[in-house]
Image (cartoon, rainbow, N blue to C red; front, side, top):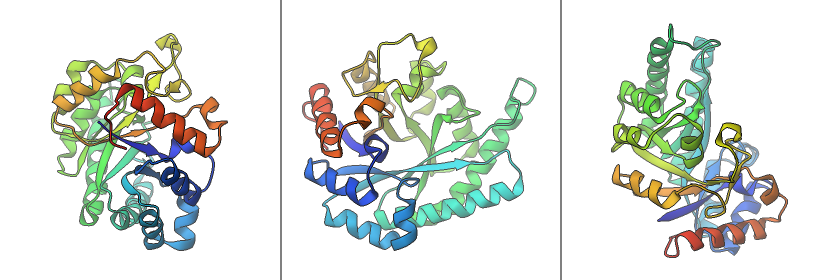
Length: 275
C-alpha cells in the first residue's frame, strides 16, 4: 500500500507551509491541489514549485484539479483546453502524471439526453487529453465530480468512449459509497485506474451521507477499505492512494498534528504502508 498526502487534507496554510509540514512529519509523497497552489504558481512559476518540492525531499504523485465546463458552449471548452495546458506544464515540471478532473452536466439530464451527454463529455475529455499528452499528463475521471457520471459503470463507459491512452479513472471510496456503484462495476474498469484517493466514512445513514464532510481517517469509519482496495488492485492498479479528507474537525488542528495523526491512522490499517 502506497499512501500520499492530498493537500486538501491539510486545508489551511500556504503551499510552502504544506511542503514543510509534510517533510517534518515524514510524508514523502503528496498530491498537489492546483486550486490551492495557484497563488504560488502565478508568482513564482512551475520551475520554482518543483525546486521547492525537491528541497523538501518530496515527490508529487498527482494533481487536483480541473473542473471542465463541458456543457457551457464552445468558448468554455476552449478555455478548458488552455487551462489544462497550463496545468500540464506544471505537472511536467513536478514529474507527476494523473490530473483529477470533474465536469459540469447539462441543465437537465434524463433518459432522453443521457447517451448524447456522455458522447459530448467523452469527446471533450478526449480533446483535453490530446492537449496534455505532450506533457506526459493523463486525465483521471472522478465519479460524482464529473457530474454526468454518478456511478463507476457510467464513468467506465465514458472513459471507453474517450478512447485515449491517457484517460482513465480514479478510485475513491467515498464516491463509490455515495453512488449506485457495485463492486462488479469495477471489472469494466480493469486496466483503466490511473490514480486513487483514500478516505473512510463516519457511521451515518448512507442516504444522508455528505460525500465530503462525512469523510474520516482510515479505520475511523465503517468502510471495508482493505477488501475494496484489494478489488481495485485486482483490476490492475498498484499506484498511490492520496489521503483526501474534507474533515472540519481535523482542519481545526495545526498542520503538524494533522500530518502526524493522519499517518498514525493509516499505519493502524496498513502497518507496512509506504508514505
